[in-house]
Length: 289
Image (cartoon, rainbow, N blue to C red; front, side, top):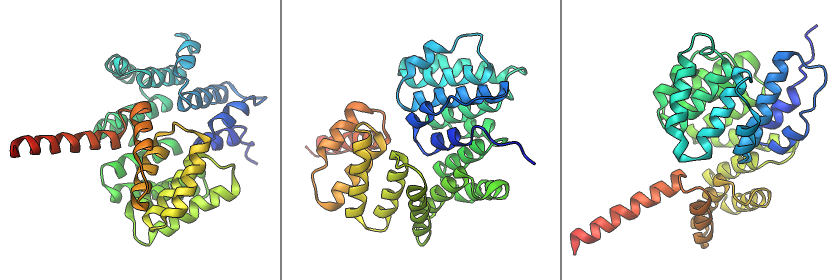
């Protein structure tokens, strides 16, 4: 009989975006040394997701395990644009070291960082061989960002063969269905609906369901889900970005959500796209004048 998975609930909280719940429920007894490192990694990654970068940077010292050092690099990378170059250089150094280069958490963090950098080929160098459900799920995300739903589907099938009911398999399935569109949107909607019925409501699940609603043209339902998400986290970038889009479709003012997004997440893709569009418009006006 297989030993019980002591970190199942903690992982599930993290995957579904219940970061504070992951932190609050992290005091799990009788963990092996390896499991303790995984537990600490998940807790620190939860703090990172909540924006508490400095706490993670301060608490993980140079004697910590490779997995935790990798998480610290992610905190450094996200904490300030000034840190990016140095962090990526350190990350490449760790990846090139035979003693640490194959560490699964290090490879995962490398994938996350290079995906942020939109250097998808570099990300896949470190994630493509898989090894954990999180690495497979990250591969799905990377391929979808590359508009390669064929490769994303192959990764999804690997996940389904390993564990069809795994939370990450279900999430990856929903992301894939959203990317493919058409009749698959309804399937994605039902996955998020199932999550809402089984687990505490999180910003991640509410946004997922809201995006499905928008794809199906149900903007009123999408708006109520997004406002619920906004009540949980008033600065969440995806909620604000989705509210901008949703408000435009409903003919409602979106400038406040846009201002909030600009202030709290100036690097967000929607802000970058709008800035580029404004610059193109200004150039067109100048050349016509």
